[in-house]
Structure formats: C-alpha cells, structure tokens
Length: 409
Image (tube, rainbow, N blue to C red; front, side, top):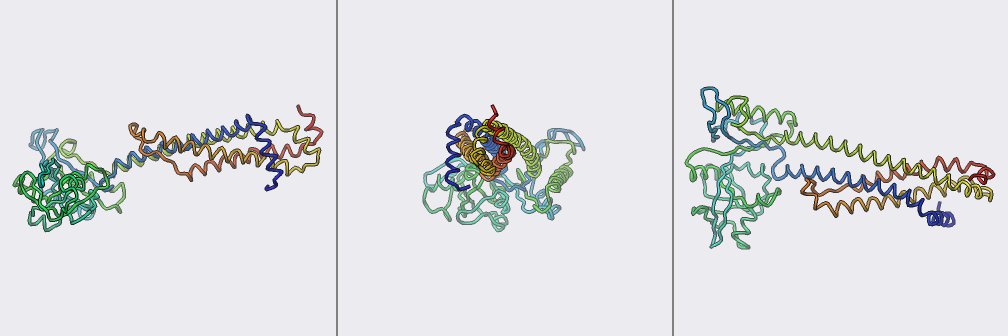
C-alpha cells in the first residue's frame, strides 16, 4: 500500500481522467455538504427553541390573574381576580411536596436617580426565592432575604446595566438611590444569564412595595419551580391541579380560560421535545436519503470506471500483474477520491453555515452548526461504501483473463 510506484500510478490515473475524478468526487462533495447543511439548520431551529426557554429556570410555572369570561357561582362575567399573600401561602402549604421555590411579584415602573443621573426602570417586588427562579447571579452584595420581607426594609438589588447607567464605575453597595423620590439602600448587584433587558430591573422586598405603593397585600403574579424529580407528566399534572385550586378559591368556572392564566414550562418542554424528535427524524431520513444517493452515485461511477479500464487491466495482467495489485490500484483510488471529496464537502457545508448563519435569525434559526464528528461519521460511511462499491467490480476485473480483457471494446 505504501509502494511509491503504486501511488505514482494512482495519481497518474487521476490526473489523466479528470472528468471521471470530478464526477465521482462531486457526488461525494454534494452529499456531505448537503448532509452538513441539513443537520446544521436542524440544530439552529433547536437552538431557537432552547433560547426561548432561557433566562428562567426550566422547571418554572408562571401564574397570572385576569378577568372572568363566564358568569357563574353567583358572580358576573368580567370580575377582576386579585391574587394576594393568602393565596401565596395556600399554594406554598398545599403543594409543598412538589414545589421547589415560590415567589410573588408586584410590578411597578419607577424613575431612579443618583447624583444627577436619572432613568426609567421596571421594579419587581419579590420574595427571596425569586433569585433561583429567575437565574439571577449576584455580582456583588446580596439578594433580598427573609429579614427584609419581615421588616419591610427599604433595600433594593439592581441589575448590572442599572449600575452602569447610574453609578458608572463608582462603588454601589451601601449607596442610596431615589425611586420616585423615596430613598432605598442598594444591597446587591446581579447579572442575568437570559438577556440584557433582565439586567435593567430593580428588585425590592415584596412587603416593602405592598406597604409603600398600595398599603395592601395584593400581588400581580406568582411564579414557582417544581421538583425536577417528579418528571414531565407529573409536572404537567401539577400545573393543572394548581390552576383548579385557584379557580376553586376564587369561585371561577372550571372552563373559564381567562380568569387564571397559567404557563407551565413543562408543557412547553414537552411540545419542544416532540417537535425536536419529529425534526430529528425528518432530517435523519433526508440525510440518509442524501447519503444513499451518494452511495448509489459512487457505485455507478466505480462500475463505469472499472468497465472503462478493462483493456488496461488486461494489459497489466498480460505483463504479469498480480490480481491483488490490480485491486489495490482501484480500491485506493476510490478511497482517496472519496476521502478528499468528503473533507471538501465538510468544509463547504460548515463554511456555508458560518457565512449565512447570522442572517438566518429572522427565519428562527439561531447559530446553525453541525457536529464535526457526525459529518465525519457520514464521510466514513461514504468511504466504506465507496470501498465496497469499488471492491466488487475490482475483484471481478482482477480475475478476468487477459485475452478476454484485451478484446473488450
């Protein structure tokens, strides 16, 4: 196999038959390139759905109140459902075995100012558990704690971009910010792994906001995370049970879909998993079809190549060439062309994905990429197929009698 004369003959054969080489190599290049692009686009779609799930814990249930759409149980349609601290406590107690973290939210818009710097921000009044539901990572200081909640302290935790807007490079922990002309002490700075908009939010103890901005125990939203050990089906059932319990507390018709709006990421994850499974099967079928087309193309070309070289093979045998040497020339040539072409196809596929990937965001395809190992395995499959496709006619050709080969037209 490492005979210099053998390799010289192989490269000489390739250079003298450029069209034949181009046809066999082009089949492999196209198959591998298309294979890489298809799997890259599929991964891009999956990345889009996964990013949509980012920012919050993947096992989160969001619960919002609304207005009743149906009359019933002595109440008129259009009744406003108002969540409160009592509801939060009820859910925490009754579903304590299934709930990991739970928090309420009160949302406000505030004008924040510090030493002449001023800007508008969203304010979220929350419980301490919110840090783990929102995936907020502290850069410095601390988050809202239970003592802040019990004493309704005037402390806040600001996002990284809020700090950059108001404080620039100054020290921030322990400083005071005016929110709607009321001073609050900054006790922490956080960053969010979701997106930059989440870092323009200011957090405050729930009870502080309730006392200052409403003098009530009303809340706008309840968020919670369920125990991951309970599984997807049980998590979906938990969301249904919580919704039913809230409707029962507020005398809401069970079929009313507007009074309580519950978003369960377990349901979303289930839908995404189903979509990804169907997408993976479709891409796999198309990818396999592409590879099979490449294999058939290589097989046909190799049969044609061997047929074309029948007279050459007869001359070699007449001059004393062994059948194994004839087979080696044909097989090595096939594997060499397939390997180089597969690598070129891989480079082209990845290059196209990198060149056009950023512009595909508008089509909901994010960061399309493909595993090099996957494409390498596909290339290896084509190489093996090319070897097999060449072996059968090569073996048959090596066994032909010289006189018969020389008579071939």
